[in-house]
Amino acid sequence: MLNNVIQFPDKPGYAAIVSTIVDGIARRILVAGERMPPQRELAHQLGVAIATVGRAYSQLELQGFVESHVGRGTYIAGGRGRADTLSDPADTETIDLSIYRIPVPDLDSKLSDTLKTIIAEHHPQQILGSSPAAGQLSHRQAIAGWLQRYGVDASAGQIIITNGGQHAAMAAISTLTHAGETIATEEFTDPKMKSVASYLDRKLVGVEMDEDGMIPSSLEVLCQRQSIGAIYVTTRGQNPTNATLPLLRRKEIAEIARRHDLPIIESDIYGTTMADPQPPIFSIAPERTHFLTSFGRIIGPGIKVGCLVSPPADVPTTQAGVGMSTGSATLIAAEIVARWITGNQLEGMIRWQQAENIRRLSLLTTYPLLGTARTDVTSPHVWLPLPEQWRAEDFVDAAAAQHITIAPTHSFVVGRRSMPHAVRLCIGSPSSVEALQIACERLERLLNSQPKSSFET
Image (cartoon, rainbow, N blue to C red; front, top):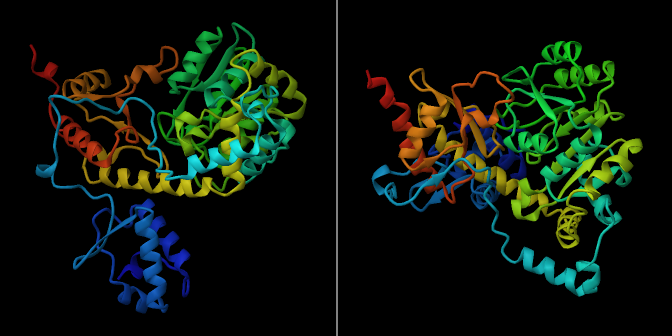
């Protein structure tokens, strides 16, 4: 009985049934391919009308969490298809798991309708003209309202709209630190962060991590031993490890920054679709934290709209960083984001992203070795520890021979720290779940094999 596996509220409405089942899928209590009880049976278990369960099942199917088959019933989506029915283009097509991509939702006519409305309401000069360095006030007000639901309580005056998350990081680093200064960050970090720091002539020093992210005691020791210009930390869904900092660590990092009078650059580029009840570091140390995020993780990377939120006293400084780099964000892209925020359309896009990600993760968990990867239900990348026989660079090369592209692990390592025997896989990158399954079939076989070098004398 489903009611014995997951806990439903008393006499739930259809929305509560949907959210409870989705939570069960996310926590892997309900697994891909598992058969759901018939509507009449679940309605009897829950003490609700059959129509209520029917509406919930329809919504779950619409969001991609379940699949219904006439005469067979309803099943949790995301199961592995039969390998012999897959067309494996091994000899002709490379499947890329290296580039950080997210599946873009099918917007139907939403984008074209929005563009038509914008064009009808604005003179072309308003759309194609220049924007204030911080962005239009109406756009910043919309983003401020959006950020409040994530614990970022900031006024529109504290928000600077940027051309994506990387632009926000560049603006913050270039104005809060000086050339030659050292920035403390996680020992494994986003390669783009490394590129930005190198371009701006900043040095990065890695802070030890565990499965919960940056270790505050290691940060404290580092700050005592050498001069640090700023702390750069990813609070949620860290790339590549998927670590999310517990609340206690967020508070400890804030206190360390206060003791050493350091600015904090808090990246939330990868956490925009996460349901995280804990407050960001920005809300714990608002006087020194600069929060950056991007809407590309929700809408699609082509939108190129992000923001940098700074303490009021620092806004003129960080705003200058936007002006001297790529300049203000494109008006039309910012207008689209603002309208989709105020029209509550981003929520539907987030649900779509979550559903698609759960489908892909559900597939991954059907493989014994791939299923050991560190995942998050909202993250389109996973961090896979390798079996004893594999070194990271050997596995990447072997995967390439199987027409699977994986980012080299050394690209995530800060400084000369030891390279972990693990790889990051971007499961959101393949164009379809079927393409991902082909990649998984090849990688699982590879994980169970011996490296060729191990047979060499």
